[in-house]
Amino acid sequence: MMGPHRTKRTKGPAMTTTAPARTPGIAATLPAPSANRLRRPSWRDPRLVVGLLLVAASVAAGSWVVSAAQASTPVWVARETLTPGTEITARVLEVAEVRLTAGQLAAYLDATEPVPSGHVVLRTVQPGELVPRSALGDGDTLALHPVPLTVPDPGASVTEGAVVDLWFVPEPGEGAAEPSTLANGLTVAEVVRPTGAFTQGQTVVHVLVPQDELPDVLAATAAAGSVRVVPVLGGS
Image (cartoon, rainbow, N blue to C red; front, side, top):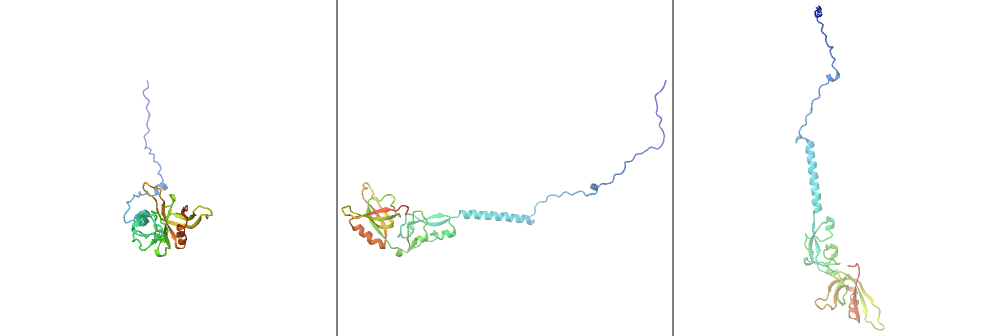
């Protein structure tokens, strides 16, 4: 009967296997990069100082522009209709806040200054209108005379400051002359209309008549006929 098979080992020196040495590559010879840490900005950094100065300058400039745009200037405006010959006083003026440039303000009455004395209005200034310096002058040079005219209802368009023409209408009859023009482009200084329960009366219109046209107008008021006040459209 055969026993288990045995392998016979041969005695001798043991053999050792050595792995070949590796040659270092290019990547292994490069130094490892160092990590750069972020540093907090210092007040000594000139770039930070310049940036802060630019921001402050832009904010200041923006605030100045906004405040300049919102600034207003007090000026004198007409409280009521000012017709030629009206004396300029604080009674006929009031203060209003407006936005004007320095060049525009020079053309009007500045309310930070006293009302100029000894001046009258040379042309009609409407209520709420800025009073221009060019509309003021010396009363001695204004050769206008207010003449009251009693007329039928002249219409709602004939008010203070309106521009009207004067016509003379002769009394009707055989051989009567045609209506004729007395004066053109006159300014209405005042209108007095009938009031109360009885309003059938006539209206009194005060017109400003130049010196050279005054004789004809006064002669027409005394002649046989009537003087009519005709409004000029767009003339006020």
